[in-house]
Structures are given as structure tokens and as C-alpha cells.
Image (tube, rainbow, N blue to C red):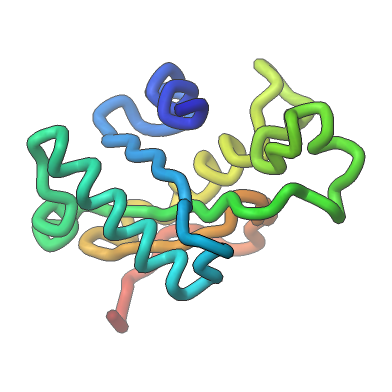
Length: 143
């Protein structure tokens, strides 16, 4: 799996060194859509973690911060750049040291929220790059 290998290799740069990377593919006939796709990705990630001897749901309940990054789409609005990456929209390289991909930049920037999202499942788009205008740390008041 391209993303599993790449993110594992970049532990300490893109994801924290002690984190668990679980890259899963959507194989729902016709595509699952946003809501069902999120539930399906969660189920597949839990199954993959179980194969590794872990329990993702228990880790989340124990206070781990878990994030799902949707990477669907071939990048039509970003054309022609995704074509250079075999229509892998989140794989499009951005200018910067080491030529990070869009997905790697999204993972790094949303990681700023992890300390405020312990025990929560966060869902992000794999191409949702944003520039924060306020501090990323906050006290969660709702679940």
C-alpha cells in the first residue's frame, strides 16, 4: 500500500514517531460517499489494527487521538497536477523541503489539534489545507 509505506517511512516527520498508521482503501461498490465512507473506513481501520494485535476502539476510549483522512477523488479541479501522480490527488507534491505531498501537509497541520482531541475521532479531507488564524489548542466542551 503506497500510503501505508510512505507514512510509516516518514514517522517523526509527517506523523509522530510513536503513532500507528493504518492506511485502508475504499472498495465499496460505486463508492460509499462521505458518511458511509467514514464509517466504512473506521471499520476497516479497526479490522486492520486487530490484525496487528491492537484494538483501535479501545485505544480511542483510553484517550488516543484518532484521525481519518479521506483521499477520494482524482483531482479534476486540480488538473493537470494529479496526472503527474497517476491521478493520486493527495499525492501531488507541494513546494517545500523534501517535496511533501498534499496529504502529508494536511496530516502535519491537523496534528496540531491532536492534544485537544484526545479520545475523539476526527475526520479530515486529504486535500483540506488551511491556514489557521487562531491557536490550535482548545478545551473541548462537547462530544
